[in-house]
Image (cartoon, rainbow, N blue to C red; front, side, top):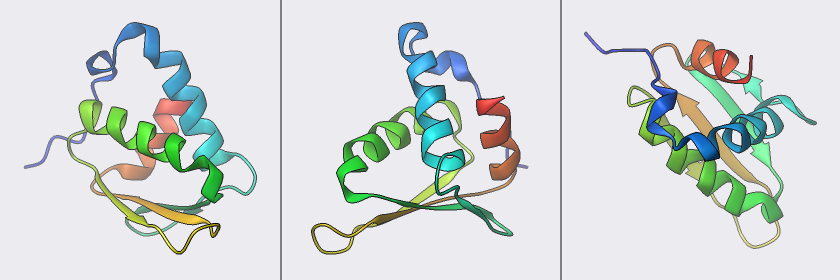
Length: 97
């Protein structure tokens, strides 16, 4: 059985508020991510690519049950970030409160 809980303490305390704000902006900002049967799909402007990488890096520390898929099209086009796995939607909603 896969553990579907996240351990936010795996992210350094000083980085947690920024990580939560980043998750909120990537998935629940404008436009909001699309909820799927497996998790979320977020279409993110190309200039936010470094934010996407930082988000995935931190989430991999605290939520080992999630899988991240990133589609990076030609320069200038939005990237597509998928977060899937057991409890993915609940994990992201809980993260942002």
